[in-house]
Length: 395
Image (cartoon, rainbow, N blue to C red; front, top):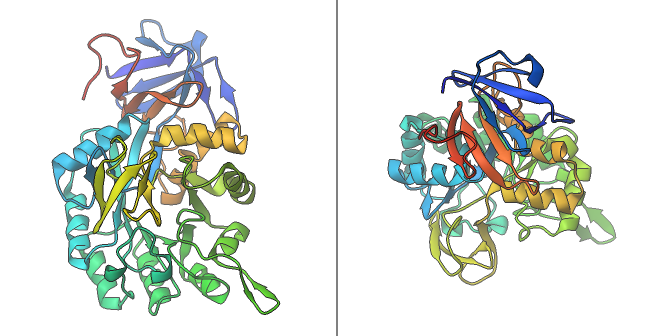
């Protein structure tokens, strides 16, 4: 169908929910939002059955799903990851690459630049490493961490421009790397880092605008004699202009920390899955994250020695449901963390909100915010209830 109207939905707008609006889709774009009574005669109408209609979810931080990872440059693997994310209401992802050899990261950047998805949009590549602090390595191979030399930065930028780079700016060369990546158009995120005080301020002055997963890979308050010295965590929560991520999988962060994050960041907070190839796999299933072997255990990714989490195994829609319950947010506030906010982080002008001229990237969600249908560019990629009608789904 090149033109149709979605009706019977609770349309989630920036601050309100409107149950009397229809969303008109034409040639892959949102043509209009209007009351039912104003719809043109003869137009195909698809009844959403009272579910929430939201912009398609955007995942800024995901390493893989369904047994496949973005660190394997293979079209079939990428296709499988994106198809798995479609089942969570996700319409766009930024592929995250864990720490690896520079040559391999360059190969993945080059592959992703030429890859053409057929469904969920690939909106860029996020380098999470190798320029990370050894003290905050988490599930990154410490043997492959390194200081950001100018020639390394240039090599990665030549391979294929990353849209986001997580780095530890306190490393030797870290501020220069921040400036270089930001100057090339990448969002620079402070993460897996000990940066605080003057180092944190210098990174922001050099172009850092984002914070990678709060409470994960972040230094915290320490004492120097009687003096309290803030760590990266406290700098993040006290920041006024930076956006930040949380992993709301009911494993990485207890509810109290999610409440703190939203109270401190508000409309600058985005939920990310930080999903791994373990998303969709059963407990006990092994998978690889970068250069490390990991395992799915108790609904989360783990290092084999159980000393650290190794990404999540939860889809973004279920994270939204958990965040809403844990932090006591409204539906528009919750949905914004996976739509409007990540779109703003990457400067995506046609995604993240429901407005005329935007991409017809949509999600239908149940009351608990579990995805029931996913639409990308007007095409129905996932529909659990036959909303689109018999024979009308296209892949």
